[in-house]
Length: 311
Image 1: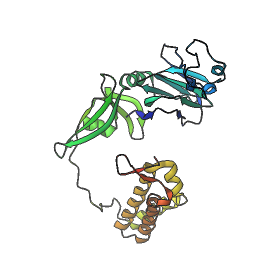
Image 2: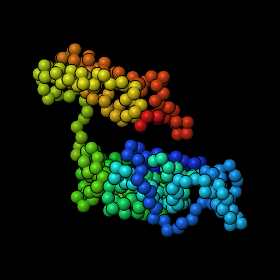
Image 3: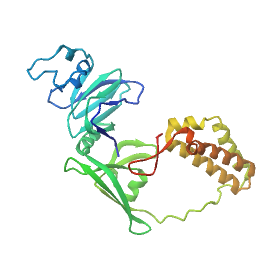
Image 4: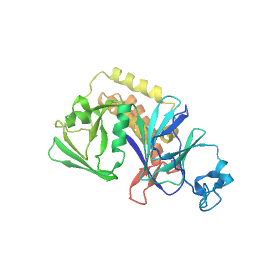
C-alpha cells in the first residue's frame, strides 16, 4: 500500500515525521475555515469543559489566544518538509484540527482513521486523493494451479472508489501490467506499478522445488572462504541487539538469512572453518529475537500470535 494507516480511538494523537530536516509548512485544501470551539482543542483552555473558542454565547475566552502554534482544519493535508519531500495526510471520516510546533504535528482529539502517504508528484497526488478512503484490512490467496494464483483483499471504505495498491516489478510481470501503469514510487527493486481493484490475478512460471543445499556457483573452496570471511570481517563489529531495535525485524532478518546462506555456501565446498564462522555469526544475528530480555516480541492479546515491537 502507498499509505501508512493508523486507527485513533478518541485520544489526542502526536504524529512526528521522521525526516531530520524538519517541516517547512502544512497546507490544507479544505475551504471551510471552521475552528474547533471546544475547550479541549486549545491548549490554553484544556483545563476547562465545554465550549471556549467561542463559547455558546459567541465570545472567545482569553485562553483561546495563548497558543501561538499554527493550526489547520480539514481532512486532507499536504505536509512539506524542509528537504523538499512532500506527504499527504488524510483524516477519515471527519475533519480534524492540526497544529504545527517545533517540527511536530499534533492532531487534537481525532477519532477515526489517519492515512499518511509519500507524495512523489502531482499525478500521484490525484491518485492518492481518489483512493484514500478505501483501506485493505485482510486478504487471502487462492491457488488455481501451480502457476496461477488469485490474491484478494477485504476492504473498509467510505466511498465508491476502488482499492489502490502498489505492485513490485516481479508482481507487475505476473499481473501482466503494461508500462502505462508505472508510477513514480521507487523502491530498491525498481519502479512500482499502481494496481486498482480488490483482486490480483497472478500468472507465474512453475517454480523449482526448494532444497536445503543448492549447487554452488563456485567449487573453489579458497574463493568461497574468501567471500565468507570478507563478509564476516566487515560485519563482525555490529551490535546485533541495537541493530534489531533500530532497523527492525525486516533488516535484522535479512542479515541473519544472508549469514546463513554464507554458511551453507562454505559448507557446500567443505570449507568447514568458514562455514562455522558464518554459522556462529548467523546465530548471533538471530539471538536478539530469541532472548526474552530484549523484549522485541510480544503476544497479541486481541488476535493471538507473536508480533514484533521493532519494525
